[in-house]
Image: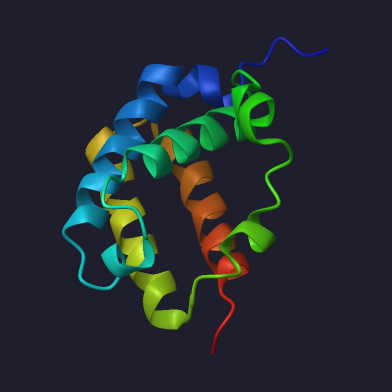
Length: 126
């Protein structure tokens, strides 16, 4: 056991992740590359899922698993054509959201490392 706070706590808890993902999806809604990848007219469900996933990943409540089971991210993203252009658009929107959220530098650095890895891992087209 460690007394070191989780990134979830260091970032500000659920309020931080709700704001971060809300800002991200505001960017997605206006992005001509990303918006067509989301089949639902309302991005609310996708926003909810990503908020819960990121909060859980970084040490917050396990609500994502309770609602959706194991993340299986590659499987869940397989139906969508994600190539370098889509990856880069996703990264740009997420980087903007992180900058807007203005987390502590150590939190921002860890978030950036994670999104760089995750974005490439979701790529399923050349």
